Image (cartoon, chains in turn red, purple):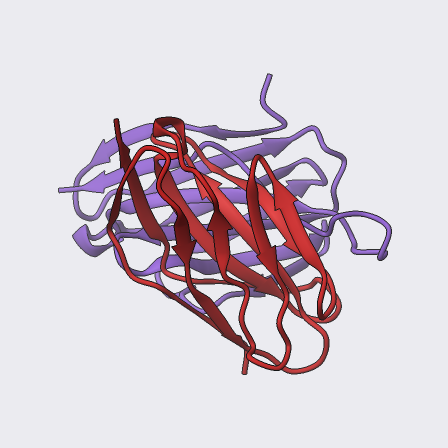
Length: 112
Length: 116
C-alpha cells in the first residue's frame, strides 16, 4: 500500500541555519509528492510539489527532489527564518490523484 | 473570504451529544474530504466524496457520518460524541487531476472539537 514516513520532530534551528526534513515513501504506480506547511492556527497549504521522478519542486526558498531510486522527497532550505516556524507535512497522492497519504508532520521552530 | 470555509471553528461539547461540522467551498471542485489531525498521528482520512452522489469511507470512519448536500457543501456529523474524538478536523477539496493542474488539496482553517 501507499504510505509516507517523515522525520520526527520537533526541530529547533537558529535563524540562517540549513534545514533538512527527511521524507520517504512507499507507493505503487506513479505517485505525486507534496510538501504542505501549517502555520499556527491555520489550515495546511501547499508548499511545493513534484509529479514525476527527478522533478524538483521549489517555493519560498524551499526545495525537494523526487528521488525514485531512494523513494525520498527530502525538504531543504539553505537559510531558515523565524517566519518559517510551522509544521511541515510530506504527502503523496496516488497515480490518479484520488487518494492522499500524509506523514505525521515535523514541527520546526526557528529562533532568532 | 476563504475558498474553503469551516464552521464552527471551535466547539466544546459533552459526551453523547450530536455534533455537526460544516464545510463549504467556492473553488468549484467536485472532490471533498474530511480529515482528522491528532498530535503525532498526522492527518487521517475520515470520509471523502468525489461528487454529490458519491460518499466513501476513509481509514477512520467509525463513529462519524457525512452528508454531501451540494457540490459546495460537505458536512461531518458525530452522532454521539466521545472524548477520543477530541481533535482538529479539516475539510479539504481538490479538482480532478488532469496533469495540467496541481492536483493538490485545498484546506479549510480547521474546526477544533473538544468532547468532555
